[in-house]
Image (cartoon, rainbow, N blue to C red; front, side, top):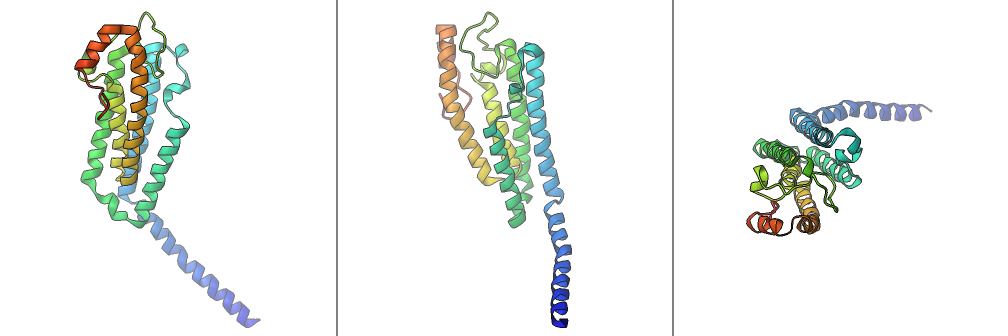
Length: 222
């Protein structure tokens, strides 16, 4: 009986001795680096999606806008969750990987630049900009070729591409950086030709000429 009691006491002592170590490990994980990077990520996501919705309401009116203008899909949530999983795994096993501040700051700059480009595209296009591809021409839908559209045909896509990849560089997530770049690029590779099929129907030779002299805004997509 005494042996059992001593064994239980030893186990309890060992368990209690592990608690401070676990707390220390957690506190080390959520250090200044993690707090800053995760807060930057949180603010970037909140601002991006809320501003998308607000601009849609301002431009098109509340009655014409749904929660879909928040641009939050199941695949998008899955991608963000995977990026956070990578972040926590790497900061636990390879904490030094997250200490490359020059890399993280480049990502932060990309987030700002991408956000600015996208919002300029939305504001410049006005009522001609919608989150869903138009398949039928409306009277207020005009071909916009001035402002940021003078430089690329799809500045809103350029902005999102820069923004999305920038969020992962900001977190120093090497795997998610490559994955986001590939997935977003693939998405636009399919979306741009589909959208431009209708734009060519709407605007004919005007769009053909515009497309000839202006790049798409996404690398390696004509």
